[in-house]
Every structure is written in C-alpha cells, then in structure tokens.
Image (tube, rainbow, N blue to C red; front, side, top):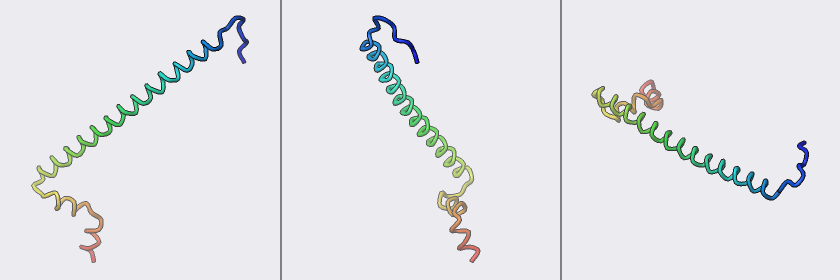
Length: 78
C-alpha cells in the first residue's frame, strides 16, 4: 500500500481520479459507437459484394437463395 503524503489533498486527488474515470468511460462509449459503425459498414459492403456476385451469375436472388437453403436440398432429395 502506498504511504500517505503529508499535506496531501485527498479530495483533489479523488476528483482527479473521478475525472479520469469519466474521460475513459466517454472514450469507451465513443469507441463502441465507432466499432458499431464499422461493423455496419462491413455488413453493407458484404451485402453489396454478394448482390454483385448474384447479378454477375445471371441467376435471380430467389434461385441463389434456394441453392443455399438446406430445406430445399431435403425437399429435392425426398
């Protein structure tokens, strides 16, 4: 444990620590928001890439979905 310094203003030190905590909490909130925005942008880019691939394939979205759907495979096999 740290030794107490003579004449230390505990209230001032506590206030400094509280300000640091507040600043870091704000930073965390901002970083979480940035992460959320990046994840949304990544998702949108992936959706666009998938849609472009579907368009280049010459197939309709419904055709591609039916190819990817495991339920369709079971229906075709049975």
